Image 1 (cartoon, rainbow, N blue to C red):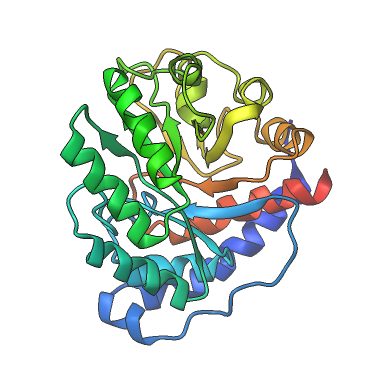
Image 2 (image 1 turned 180 degrees about the vertical axis):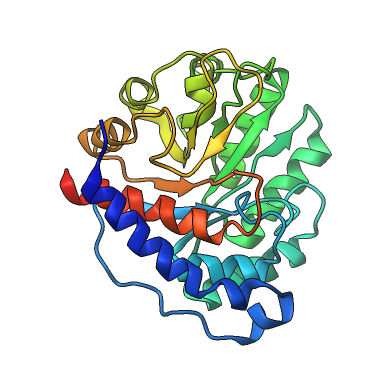
Length: 288
């Protein structure tokens, strides 16, 4: 069903994003031009930006985008913080930079966690150094007992990310849910709603089913059909997903985590699409 009010809200926010496009055209400009102030608005859900969205941009540009769309929560992809290979000092500097910009570092891109003690410790040390509250990850299933030991040692929350039918390990959030059941409750889920739908599971139903250990949400939209092994991302509100149903479900379970916008449409500068998408989400929330 169309949502004319929310679409108007989306386009209004998209216009705001368009104002920033000249500033985001070069890395030097992004670092020197003052972005709009971070919003102090109270929202019914904690909205954020997953920086896979801006993977072709610098960290400075990514911070500017977050400020343009007026979100204060940021989850960093590996191009902005190399969680698996960087040093703790490098990760600490990234965390400090995000906080100095008035933003909160809430999560990561997908961190691979192999069955290797040294590599696991390096990843956990980097998360600790950056002040990363939730490590979004893809653990080797056989490594989960060892990973649990690190979770307890570092008091670190993990969120397993589902990747759709093409992924042989965690194609659906149900597969990740089954994998984590024997382990510490700090090991939860990052529900990617687009990949969830392609895997044949209703995202709104998944939100309710996995509420007890739902740590993070990657919010997006797609025109890919169930079973598709390749995503076809579009602006939120323009695709096949029932975004209002997902938002209702999140409100119904009193979800306290972050709803991280992950805009993956591979065309041009993402700022306009990001602004339209976040505007649509805010418009829907205003009607619920």
